[in-house]
Image 1 (cartoon, rainbow, N blue to C red):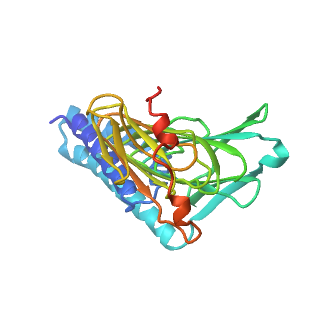
Image 2: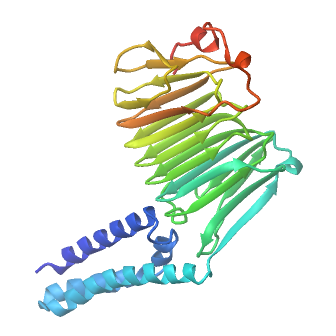
Image 3: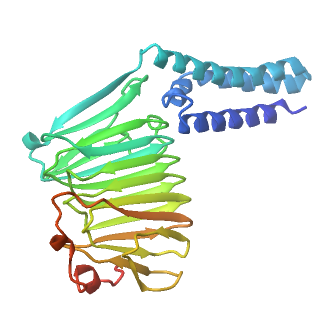
Length: 325
């Protein structure tokens, strides 16, 4: 019996189950990175597996498999116990972008089986918070400032599969008066960006088996670009916001309000659906295999009058419908 192959298959099974448990919230997000600290145990397990195959000793082979499965289960239980006892805390740090002289901000976040929460702060501070921290270098971001352009990169290495990223829950609070660009890459992740108090310029999303939600307010980005694989995006817009949705792939599923009209019909490239409104339209570009886009209008507030809602049919959105690249 080839215990080496069996042990390798057991390792893949354990990793898959662990990441799924983190994704659904059963296991603590820091469990994978904590277990990686004990990677020499894998050498012991594989050594026993190959030795079992050489001397034809099934006991050693079963013991190698037990080391992998038992170690994974013990790590999940240990992290769950620490959280239950309240020994895991949030960790964060802040930067004063006003004193730094920043004129714009780019936020680049990579998550793997984790989540990103972005919203506005009540001051000039840029704050990064890591929730329920169990590892060293909890915040782990990189900040650069060049000619007034501030760049925040999380995790520090700027890689989707960085060892500090799996399962992480990160919150970014940005200054409200600073032009901000959001770039998020998610793998098996979730993202919620509440931009109602911010001054967004662009949102660039790259999703694989992930979900994203963007809430817009008075400040509207020039464009939202999404490439996804089996992923979804929900955009919540103000009641009077004009929107242009350009589907650059035939595999885009759309859920749009009733006031949207199809201006460039067809299921192929560059289908355009648009709704009119007041002010500059928000352009949403969607591409990738099997991506779902849902647009929801926020309810009309008490201060919004019927006169303010009665925009002309020849509004901004209808005058600019060409799907630019």
